[in-house]
Length: 499
Picture 1 (cartoon, rainbow, N blue to C red):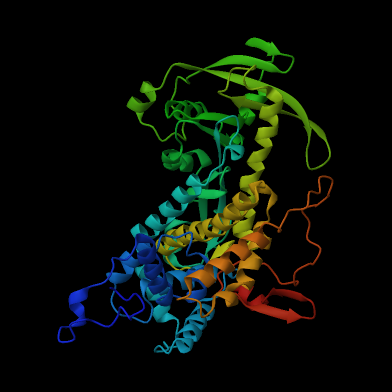
Picture 2 (cartoon, rainbow, N blue to C red; picture 1 turned 180 degrees about the vertical axis):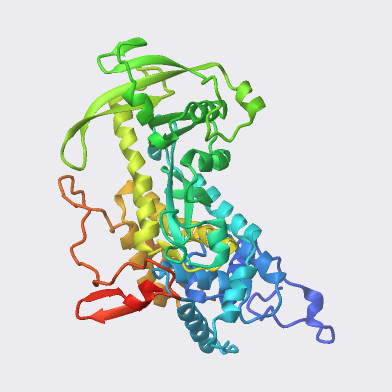
């Protein structure tokens, strides 16, 4: 009779090695948990632990295994850079100090306080590596998309442009020159950017760059790969061109944009088919001559259809000055019964969400200026900015899905502050999967309470209340400029002006 109370770890045949008995095959879940713990232990633990449920552990492990044994490995450099961006674009010195603290806590070799090694490690992060991480985030965000986040079955996406400043270096000036109205040495290189935002998930799908004088439609042509059948593209009037509307329609995407100013000035509301008191169905014909700002050659332009049907919607709204003005929208959704104009006008108001996301990028994260010395690092920084924002948006999306609330009702700044404050709770938890999961669930629960307060009648004028110091404007190169300090006034030296 078998005694089930005996110790099964004790072998019956004591003369044989215990390796002969083998062990049970680890489950897939156990292997993933072990891999996540190993990766978290080999990176800045707090950041890696917070975002471990979002980023695939195997993705980070592949690049970590192929790297040399350095103080700043690809994983460590990546999370240090993410921490740097989420900490209001803090300095590289602060990022190195954070890595030093982490190394000291984990009995590792503490790297030097010089920032050169960390800056070189950031340069070694490949664009393919960052592109795979970004793709992983956007695909995961799309898989969490709910039906309530769609608009009548369409995936709403917005496109818009902006710009950021770069350090005044010869390389940056050559690729992204400063404004032509400024004297040499008196301005900063300006990098124009354009991005596509998925309004149903809050994630940035892609961004592209160009010189400051590049028109938005030229930049938009590089982002067409992010539009698919079933998408509804929202954009301002800068993107409202015949080429853009036709190209989107050929890709299976519909569009809703504000009418271009040149078409608005020459608009004759009596033309076209009347669909309602404020709706018209008109036909736009392809321009005979190729527009100056197009990205198409003669053969591609000739292949475009000769005409396209556009539905115009006209209504009144109140601008920032409190004045009643007329807005005209142009859309390829021509069925007025299936898509009422009232709903389309409310939908177009969602386009403002991309302006708020750009404000989160430039104002909340203090990224109006990229502290980089080369164009390649400027574009790589833009990739990292998208990843950093998408990480926070993924946490917000998970919290909204868990609580069953609207994605747009949660605050980005409030969620960012909470995540930064909770980093210490993940310290020392790299090998405690269950405890990390409990902390993460509680974090999502509190993120769901970071609600935005609706203030529809709040007046926020674009004016500066705190005036800057009364410094003079830089009117010549900084190497030759000499200032005279006299009480509260600063002026150019007379002798320097005469020279």
